[in-house]
Length: 98
Image 1 (cartoon, rainbow, N blue to C red):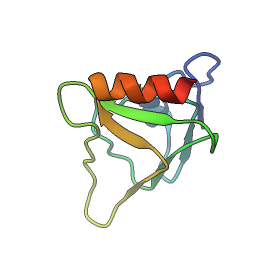
Image 2 (image 1 turned 45 degrees about the vertical axis):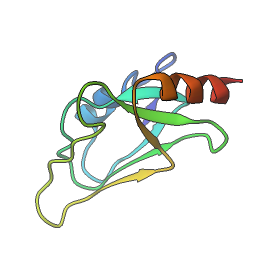
Image 3 (image 1 turned 180 degrees about the vertical axis):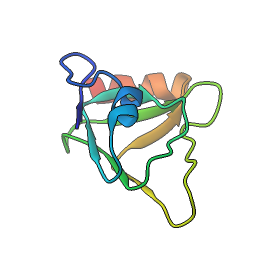
Image 4 (image 1 turned 90 degrees about the horizontal axis):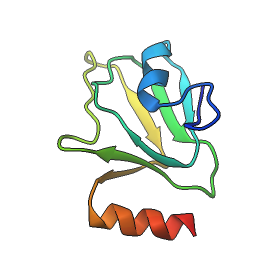
């Protein structure tokens, strides 16, 4: 599944997670995403699509990501930067956009 906030077919990480089946790989295009709802699907792999582009998952007033899985289930994040919003994010995102 590809998430691209501009061109789709999925426009947000939350939309892709809600439509994904277990053991699905979700590819994120460059940008900043949020994940406000707990991830409850087993075997999801969430990774950035382009190796030379930065992908952030941001916490906005709470945990960056909440995982709510049964025992022995898993979620994998590959090459994603987890960050709370604030000045450090603005500086990092500005650097990666240039």
